[in-house]
Image (tube, rainbow, N blue to C red; front, side, top):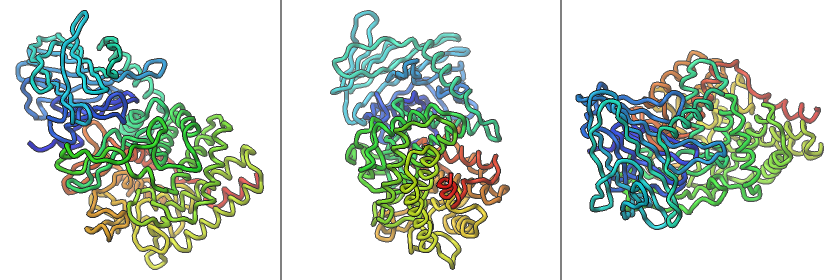
Length: 617
């Protein structure tokens, strides 16, 4: 049986971890207790033998008339309903939301209810800790109502609910008839081995609290423009990727491939300062201030600016060394399956600019400044001053030869521009320092315009003195490096449309070729169309005044979302399927930014004037 498509999965989160669930009720991915933890259900990247948990009808035929699902209002709880012929079964899946103290329990709740007639409910429970590599011991223990305890090394899982039959080979199952109005609750909770048994979670009460948490959060969204439902669903997804400690994961999965059968399979369950800064900017644009403020605190606590990394663990610790999991066959046979990420050791110059841009936007939004943030902003600018002349690995984390990427230099300029503006406003740096940073920004600007622009093709290029294009060049107008009506911006937008188009309005990040030696990223083969870059094109088209084209493209992009409004990292316009890790924060950030761009006038930060005005002020 072929693997289900990536976009068939529902996404559950409680801002501590996440789970993915298929329309047949199978949970194929779950990491407990946190996003970065080893998966206890990993069939997403292997087979059912690598761990899964199905709660649903005993028989299920996948036709639109027999099953339907939706998020429960503006939440991350999912209702899945089946018409079995003899009755209607509904299963509500969710991860209990954080309580008033911010604590989110490492727990999954599944509530099954017969809505009419009579149905046979099954639970097929196959835990496989350590990414599906361990077969645990299962036993019922007391006192009181017995609980199914699953133990494997340092991890213990507790299943409360209807009694299961424990089978040979480390699985358990039950098959129970339900009549109209009857409900059963299943609760799975993680503890470290040797810890006391966890308190029992009352499922219905937990559902009410979870609905209340997400509904109240969604109600704070200030966006009331076009496509509000899509924007709000993307905002909820971004919130679901946030971690209770202040940072956010790029995606809750690892090694979903782009393309199928290729080697571009990466672990995204860590926090990238770049991605997280953009996600926080998107939330800030929708009226949310708590998450950006928490992330600012995380940055000032954990970053060492003398050794800024492109990604971190959610607790600020180093990312584990990249290692493959040979026991997993990979999604649709795409190997290797990786845990950890070697990009943590790269030098990516653009990161300084994205963080500075976030701090500046927070200041512009009136979030109270703090000395630690000013210190961070100045340190970012001083590092850029020292490093901007060196090659880097770029925002796409090339595993090829380091180069002087144009987008990296543009973001280096942003770091200096925002630092001069904000620090000048706060009086947090002396005028000599501000003038020196401004002069460095002008030097970067001049070099990019002289060596990063192809006069013949009327476009900026991927790196200095290069020829290839890069979709990240679409940021040039957005960040104010040049005004939207500059002929170099207009030519770059047109060239990217022409040379990086992948069909259906989709865009490649940059050109790829068969042989690794011919690819700037050092990897062999091609990849799918990158969804975030297509949304960047919507934003760029709106900025340059091509509103009709922007609206048309945005409509096409909305149409490729899953039935639950979710987006992966990439899309295959030929096979019409999602690729890469899922759901992807950058894709949903891109959707929000594109919607905002369509709904506002073509305005960007002043290009070269900000530096002078900040100094004069």
